[in-house]
Length: 178
Image (cartoon, rainbow, N blue to C red; front, side):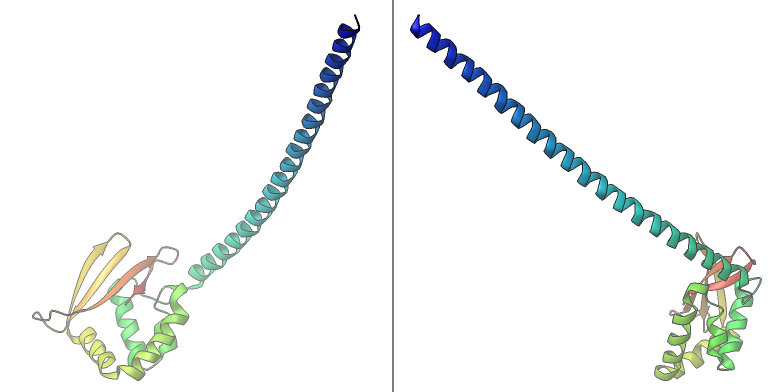
């Protein structure tokens, strides 16, 4: 009887120890889950706030770009008209005006590059103006607009090339690449 009483007591202590340990680990696991949930929620909230900030910036930039398109009146009704206006500005050495015949997002870069071209390659700029005025212009339709190739003559193998894009807001043609 004494042995069975001891066995029952040991068995009961084992069961209570196991039950207590399980409760403790369940508590710790739940605590860890809660902590992980809170961290994930905080991380998600931060990402959401950043996404909202970027969305506001995107809207502001889109609005600014649309305003630039709406206010842009530099260009011709055809790619060739824009080319003529561009060449006229180059001949007058009005690089600020010449840069306005580019798409709005390239105005500043175009003006800087034209000044650099004039300094480094004045003969090339003169030749471009000459070819644009007296050479052969070939037009090729592209997905994003029109490509103009300017040849000195029918034998010329190295044409000047301009990519033109239509500003759909004002229906004027712009230089997108030169």
